[in-house]
Length: 143
Image (cartoon, rainbow, N blue to C red; front, side, top):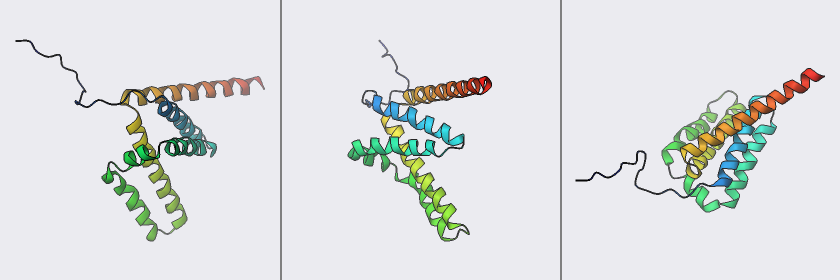
């Protein structure tokens, strides 16, 4: 009796080949988030612009990916609902919008990239951010 070779992590369904455009968008998105953490609004604009362009180019697939898990949207829905009783409604609304956008982008990323591809995109963006930090420190020490 011959045993079939097992393939761990194979769920039986085949996933489409790697999406390079989504990988590049994820790298740019992660760089944008890192720039935002440094205190610049430019990173948030990059985050939104990159996935906004991706969504505009692939509207049908993006809508399917965003709404494939309706339960995922319960937390952002509750965040929007909390605007009704918040003392600072503007701040709460902004946080709810940011949360909804983050959940939407995460849904798109998980639909376009395999976990290994996501980790590679995140690693490249972290290395790029570290390189930029090193360059800015070197330039500052020269001045």
